[in-house]
Amino acid sequence: YERYFNATTDEEKDNGVKEHLKSVRKHVAELADKKYDELKGINTLDFVLMFIPVEAAYFVAVNHDAELYRFASEKKVLLVCPSTLLITMQLVGSLWRIDDQKRHVYEIAEQGGKLYDKFVGLIGSMVEIRKNLEKSVDACQKAQAQLSEGRGNLISQTQKLLKLGVKAKSRLPEELLLEADEEENHFPEAEKVSTAEEVIGSTEK
Image (tube, rainbow, N blue to C red; front, side, top):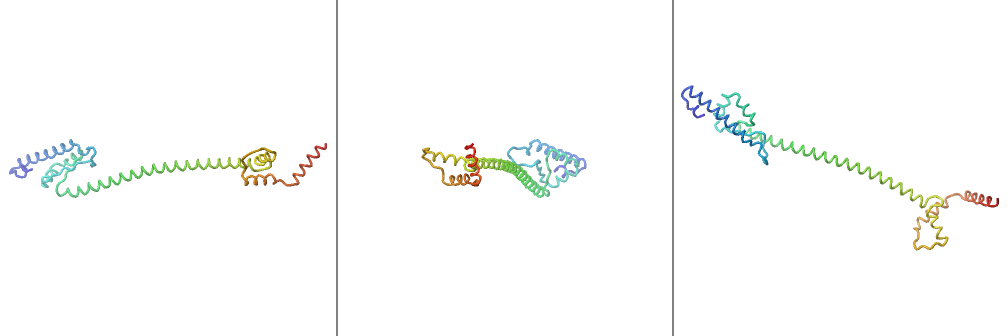
């Protein structure tokens, strides 16, 4: 660029521009080959900033090479100069924040999906527990009915063994005995008399 700027003839200017453009493209290619955007363990963007400190040199390059931007962008290199560096850095900062927010959104969505799956699984387990509890309650009620409900229930029959002289150290709970007796005596007296008369009649016969 200095040779271009200090040239006194058109030929010197043309040669200076060509050498300047060749130097800029060479530096773009060298930056691309270093692959700074692929460094492991470093949170980088997808491109590298190539800073041209002399602003006039920057504008000479982009004005004389219409394909320079495309050439650099294809190699993931962004050309900047003093007047564009600050706004470019602000843009990079915004992109970093957006990328960070997007990553958080993805993590929230992933965690939300896992939480939802766990919740569905818990609901399924609760439904199974409720069904099993209902079955257990039904079985308990049936067993209770066999013990103390109806005439000739097990508690009443077992208690009659004591009256017949069976020796036992333990005694049934009083509340169960009362409940069993109530069930045993629940039938109407007429039914009992009728049954007794039928038994006597059949005996006489």
